[in-house]
Amino acid sequence: MAAPVDSRLLKLVAEITESRVEEVPVLLLKLKDFLKHVPPGSQELKELKAGLYHYDLIQYCVLVLKQDFSRVRGSWGTAADLADILSNCCVGLDPKEDPDEFYNKLLPSALLHMLILGRRIQARFVRSIKDEERGQLFCSFKMVTDSLCWLFTGHLQLANTVLQQEHFLQLLMTDDVETGTVVMSVLQSILRADRVILNQVPDNVLHPILDELVYKLSASTNPVVGSAATRSLLQMIESRPDVGRIMGIRYKGLRSLLSKQWTGKGFGRELAHLLDRLQSGSYQREEMQRLHNAACTIQAMWRGFQIRKRVRRLPKAVATLQRSFRAKRQKEMIQFKKQKEVEDLRQQLQLHRLRAMRAFREKQLTMLELVHAGQMDKYLQEIQENAALEIQSCWKGYKERKAFHQQKLILKKYKAAVTIQRAVLRFLKKRRKLCDSLSPWKKTRSLNDEQRLHLQQKIDAHIQLHPAQQRAPEQSQELHVQAQETLGQYLLRWKLEHGAEQRREALLAQINTDIGMLMGAPSLSEGTEKDLEIFSSRSVPVALKAKQSHTTMLKRSRWPWWKKLSDEFIEETDAVMNDSLDMDQGIMFVAGAKTAKVTDSSGCPLP
Image (tube, rainbow, N blue to C red; front, side, top):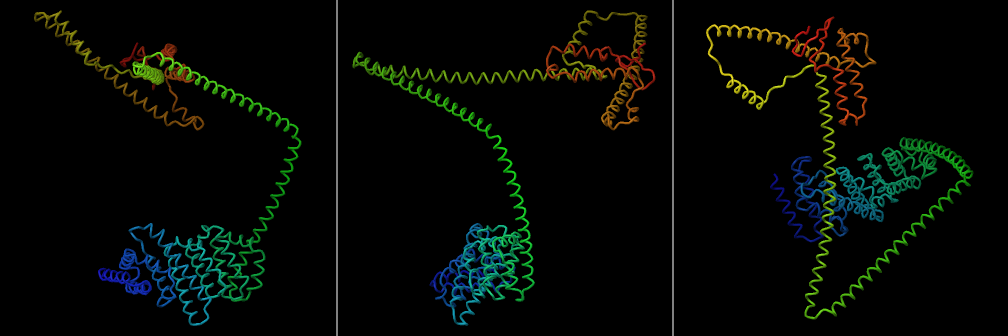
C-alpha cells in the first residue's frame, strides 16, 4: 500500500513544481484526499505524514499560507482548507530527520501564519456587507481557529506561544460578536488543554488579555459575549488563583458592575461563581490591606524609636565619625607619602639608568676612538661574547638557585615523612609489645632455614668429634634399657604436655567466650545485678590481676600523645607492664575454681 502513496506524492510534487504560483494552493488541497483514505491512528497514516514532511510538502503549505488568497480559486475557503490540512499533518508527526527544525522552527512558523490568516479573514468579515460572503468568511474563520486548536492540542508547547503572540491579542480585541466569541472559545480551549499554562505566562502578556475580557463585559450588552467572557475569566482564575486578586486590584467596582449589568441574562450560574471568586479576592485584599497598615504602623513606631535612640547617641557618633575621618585621612596621607616615595625612587632609578647608559655610550665612543678601524669587528665581537657570558651566568645562577630551593623543599618534606614514619613505627611497635605482654599465650618460635642449617652443622661437628664406640652386649643392653626409660619419660612428659595443651585450648575458648560476653555486655546505665554476677570471677588472683591491668591501662590512656611517641618513656612503660603482669616468668592464674592453680608456661602445676 506504501508504493501507491509514494507514487501519488511524487506525482503531486512534480505537478506543484511545474505549475504556477496561483495554482499551488489548489494542488495542495489534494492532500486532503490522501489523508481521508487512510485510517486514523494507523501506521500507514504515520508513514504518509513522514513522506509529506520528507518531500517538503508540509513546509510548502506553511509558505503558501503567507500569500493573499483573494485571487486564488476558492478564495479564503482554500486557505482555511490548507490550514486544516497543515494541522492534521503536523499533529501525530514525529520526524526522525531534523527534529529540532520541526519543533523549533516549522511548528511556531505554522502557528504564526495561522494567526495571521485568521486576522486577515476576520478583517474581511468585519468589512463585509453581503450575508452570503459573511457566512463563507465566518466558516473559513471557524475552520482556521479549529485548526489552530487542533495544532496546539497535539503539541502543548505551542499553547504558551499562542498566548504570547501579538496576533492573538489582536484577534481578541474586536468589537464583532461572532469572531470575538470564537476567539474566546480558543482561549478556553488553551486553558483546558494546559491548566497550569498561566503560571508560565508573564504579567505583561496576561494583563492585556484580562483588560480585553473585562472591557467586553463592561462595554457589551450581548449575552453571548458576556457568557463567553465570564467562562474565560472563570477558567483563568481556576488555572491561576491569583488572577482573582489581580482583577480585584486592577478593576475596582467590577463586582457591582457585573451584578447590575449581567444578572438574569441566561448564564447566572457562571456569573455567580465569578462573583464569589471576586468577593473572596476582595476580602483577601482587605485583609492584606489591614495587615499592611498594621505593619506600616509597627514600622513607623520602630523607626521612631530607632531615630530617637540614634539622636541620643549622636554626640558619641559624631566623635566616632571625626575619629574615623581623621584616621582615614591620616591613612590616606601615609599612603600618599608612600606612593610619592615609590615615585621618587622610580625616578631616581630611571635617572640612574640614564646616567649609566650615557656613561656606557661615552665609554664606547672613547673605545671606538682608541681602537683601530681594522680591529673594530673583533672588539665588537668580544663585547657581545662578554655580554652573552654575563647573561648566561645570571640565568644559570637563577636556575640553580631555583632548583636548590625546590630540592630544599623536597628534602624538608622527606625529613618530615621520615620523622612521621619513625614515630608511627615506634608507636606500632609499642602497641604490639603491649598486646604481646597482655596475651596469656606465648607462641613458640619456629626455626628458619638458616637456623636449621646451623644446628645441623653443629650436630655433624659433634658426631665427628665424638664418634660411636664399639660396645659389649651388656653395655648395649644397658644402653637399651636407658633408652627405654628415656622414651618412657618422654612419653609421660608428652602426655602431660598434651593435657596442658588441651587445658590451654579450653582456656582460650573460655577467653573467647568472655570476650564475646564483654562485647555484648549492656552499658553501665542498663546493667543489672544479674549482669554483674555474670561478669564477676570467683578467683581472687584473677580478680586482682584484672583490676591491676585495668588500672594500668587507664593510667596509660591518660598519657598525652607526645609521651607515647617519644623514646624516653619506653623504659617506664616496660617497667609498668612488668609490674602489672608477670607473664614473662611463665605464671598465670586459671579461673573457674574456688582455689587458683598456679601453672608454668607449659601448663604443668607448680609446687
